[in-house]
Amino acid sequence: MQDPRNPRPPSGLAWRWGVIGLAVIGTAAVFGYAGGWLAPDRLSPKKIINVLQANGGDHPGYRRNHAKGICVGGHFESSGQLAPFSSAKLFGPGNTPVVGRLAIPGGNPQAPDSSAPIRSFALRFDMADGEQWRTGMNAMPVFPVGTPQAFYELNVATAPDPATGKPNPDKAKAFFGTHPETGPFLMWISHAKPPASYVDETYKSLNAFYLRDPAGQRHAVRWQVVPETPSTGDGSPAAGDTDYLAADLQKRLAAGPARWHLQFVFANDGDPVDDASKAWPDDRKVVDAGTIVIDSWQPQAEGPCRDVNYDPAILPHGMEISGDPIIVARSAAYAESYLRRTSEEGHLPGTERPKGETP
Amino acid sequence: MSRYDTFHPVARVLHWLMAIMILSMLFIGAGMVSTLAEKHATLVAIHRPLGMIIFVLALIRLGFRLAHRPPPLPVDLPEWQKLAAKGSHWVLYALMILMPLIGWGMLSAGKYPVVMWGGFVLPPILPQDPALFAWLREAHRYLAWLFFLTFLAHMGAALMHGLIRRDGVLKSMTTGN
Image 1 (spheres, each protein chain N blue to C red):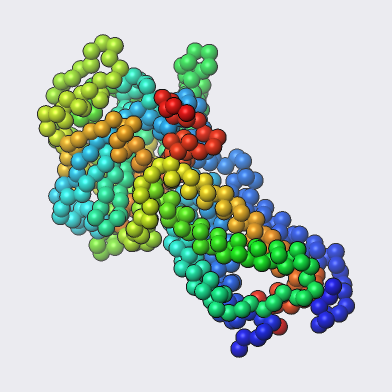
Image 2 (image 1 turned 60 degrees about the horizontal axis):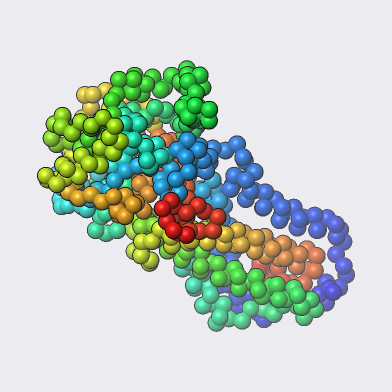
């Protein structure tokens, strides 16, 4: 058995096997902790997506949030005015193609357009050298909460009650009562009405990010896309119409492109950079980076936006995430949602088939 | 320099360098998909370029391995252990090369930018395809498990050679015999 160079059996055999066992089991245990299997209390991407999926219902193949939407296409015309503040190439001269998506919140792709007063706009900028910028914006002034944990609790507290199909008002009240950061959002939503058009809305990043200028200085910003033409007041939906947003968009794009200005709002010293539930004062410096021109649309089932994960942490060189914990949580949770819906599209074993597909 | 019963110094340096990198990579991967805390972004940003460095080193190492015979296993080693040793080594080589390729291909199929660092992006190696993305993403997960379990067996066997059998196999990859 033994090597001729070590003819005697080793002493302390039990101790030696113990060291080996400890090394193997110890490494496995640390791995189990890193992967969260030994830390079940950790707020994981799966937990966030599970609660969104439970609230929205099972809709295989669809996003777990903002499930109802429409693909749009166009380009970004840079004004060059942001170039001194960010070295990202898309802010230099020239145009960058965009793949966009306009949507409403919630996990139900058949929800009526009036089900929420919030509209969202997601964009992917495809730069010539392969870099990308992805952003998901919402037409509201602030995010309801400032942390992923509070977002999770908000969704648990506002889950539809199985008996009524509506959120339990006591649970919701208890949540909002213990989360004063939701005040500005609640104030806004108490008088917000579902807009009749995607095109007239101003969409905001809500989260703050950093721009990195060519000299290496960073600047805390939030951004927004502001419609070029003021609200026309046109296109009020007929009573009982649940899908008026897509129809309105199609009608308007048939008449010509829709344009938004991409504005960057710069924080002053002391403005909260890591808390999307807090608005910045209105007088902050604004730089107009250029124009988003949207000139085409496709239904999301076959449009190019369907298979895009609008992960807000995908940024070109010259833009960086801030300490806002919501950004990274969105990134991690979107990846989980993207894996679930692409697995359903790809008919992976154990996944539900998208509805309407023949097995 | 290199002796018949000891790995070539280049092989030993590559082995230990890659051991640290690959073990880190497995922990980073497991950690980044399980958390939505801020470290998620940092871990993802390390995972991609580290994976590509492992890929390049693995190709160099495979070339070196094919050009340099490793020291033979002890003659008295049971046949099943010889088979297990040889098989697990080829599994580890295959995974060192396949895992980065699957990761790169999976990001390509999801039309993600394969960012290495500071604006340097690798080109896609596969067309955009959601089903392909999902298959590769799941393959990446399960092969990572296989990688980790094979690593555990490899480490346990190495320690068994060093502490129980004391047959020079562990030394052939450390200080030399």
